Image (tube, rainbow, N blue to C red):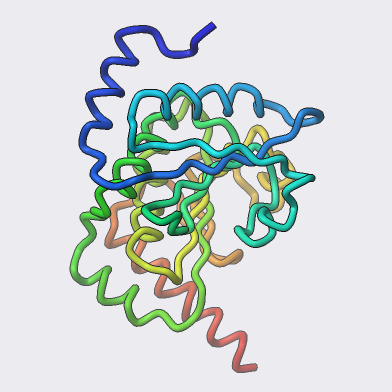
Length: 223
């Protein structure tokens, strides 16, 4: 049984017409002990079927462990949205991109397929100055209407800079991470492990938090 009805398929197909260059969805899964792997794969398959510029490659998390490690994939289900010539922008989905997060998946495909991030000049200038890697984890639930805004912004930062990796993490599928990062509400963005931002914050606020996180990391390294 298909997850998308005919109307949704038509809407997604029309949306994906904007994709200008090839997009590859890498999915990491396994047959046993993976909640929502089957459903996540079905979502990715149905989306890929709606555009001749979108391709799905499915990998076994265990058998293809070298590839998973090379791409920094450490949990499943996982989706990586890569661009032309399989360029890895560091855009990740951990957990099923269902509910409101289905929008985040489509936005990621469009962003990679058009290479348009729509970020402010000040943000780009700062990202260009980064000397060390930046890791963003945006914790979400499928029923949160504000979460896609935070996820899309984080993914756009990853698209704009090779130094940035941005993960959507569906917190109910990874409760140990929810406890580790004290996720009491969503969206909650974790920046480099020790800096936090609550809610769907505007770009300028996220940039300020990133500045603080990078300065904190630099200070710790200097000790």
